[in-house]
Image (cartoon, rainbow, N blue to C red; front, side):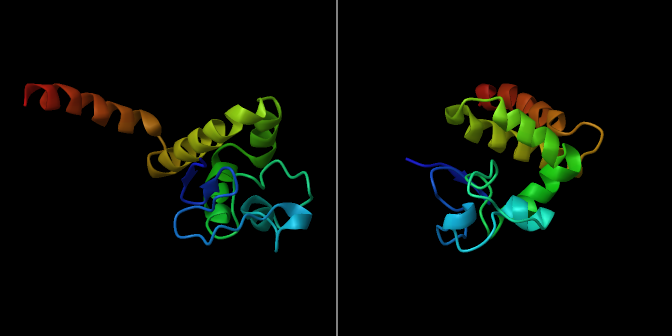
Length: 124
């Protein structure tokens, strides 16, 4: 089973609203979302291609690049085993989008809001 979150995909599944195509360098119909954003040729062994689809991947990668930098994310993914990369990409995308929404607290504000819901839910 493949997992995907809006533009970030694993196992060849496109993000929500996508048509199932993933830019995989020479085998795809065009560059992956990351290479599209970086305006570079997507090579067959592109580290980003399996995770950033053509449709929404560029928008998600833009947030990741702005917060963490493409080089740092590439190094991170290269140091991880392949089976853990999708979790890393999903986490990096979530944290980047949270940091852009809330530059001071980032994803911590979301965690704090969820922690406040726990006592209210358990009291019900």
